[in-house]
Length: 351
Image 1 (cartoon, helix red, strand yellow):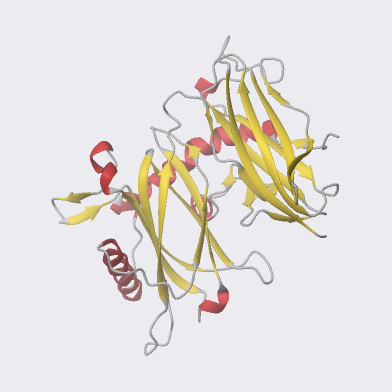
Image 2 (image 1 turned 120 degrees about the vertical axis):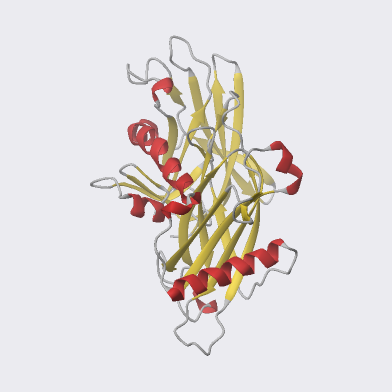
């Protein structure tokens, strides 16, 4: 039997072509000290405390972990050889006495990769301070996407392909000067893929809780806070890949570096669902293949002009029995005779 899915691909292509060319550039500017806003004395003290905390962890001290910090990220191709990395953090609200926090993000190249990348951690000879491929800090009031759900915050950074350690420091901004602020540091190893080497590839497969249109693009400040909003398309990434039967599984991704003929690709994308059972995995169903070629793409489609080759599906889960599933996504470049596959694991719970 075939699953009935709605193709999300070309509904997103126009806004992705604009937004992905802009958002990573904005993100990369965060390392420019001239861009930093003026801080109050209290904010400066908070920042110094969180900087020193992360410094100690980088120097080998145990990372303080009074509460867990969930991490999820995706990868998309940006400009100028960079890779755009939107991410989401999640925190148990019961572990904090306040939702007002200061957060610090530091992306450091791993020592083994230091000599092989131009984005290596190095020392600023004029200031005597370390300069990292990316760092940023912000003050925030954490919120939850719904009742009984963890607190979440999303941001993004842009770096070159390579091996990194990402450090995220979180510190309470308590109004009680006698109280000791709760603080924690997450160290997340990250391998950033290379989408600039000319090989057939895709972005991360983004699993979304929802996709909706906005009346207008976000401001630069709003975009920084909502890095999964692309142009006028607001994507809410799913954090745990568990869905109810009355929901839809929505996925989207971009195809990079396909072979071209007359400036058009010839790509087919297939989606096959497999169900996990007590006896092992068995085929469940599939959707109709998505064809991305001269017959289906707009006449003016041009990868060289910044257009994006986008694929995606939104599949109702009403016909899926509760349980665990593996979605196999197969991307076939017919011109280059190359195929790549991705697996997406998800769970269908009761309604």
